Image (cartoon, rainbow, N blue to C red; front, side, top):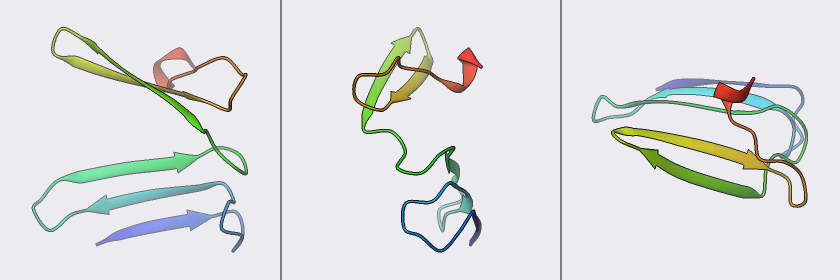
Length: 66
């Protein structure tokens, strides 16, 4: 079960998605601008994982950076 909020019906529009999966896990996904990221970086620091994203050629950013 979940919600999706989109700026438009365009497949690549900015959006936010909040979901509760059948096994009880939850997730939140979002795209700030049309097109979104095409480069991802997953980094582990101890027991914490950090995800950064960018368009090719741009600086990687994460929610923690903002």
